[in-house]
Length: 84
Image (cartoon, rainbow, N blue to C red; front, side):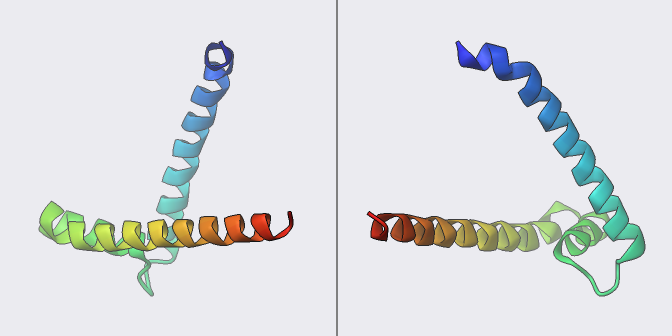
């Protein structure tokens, strides 16, 4: 019941998120390509050598992000349980 009411806002938010991500990547690619950041390195490897060359860097970046999210979740859970 709630999702049908929220779906227009969710779709709008997803479109805005995608647009911002595209503009942020473009700015990084044009203005700050040196020193290389991870997204620029992935893009350059993909355009130069293909998907097989870009995949290890992308997997490493995703793994680091997931590890940080899990650690933050664990720290948040421990901090929340110590307040009780």
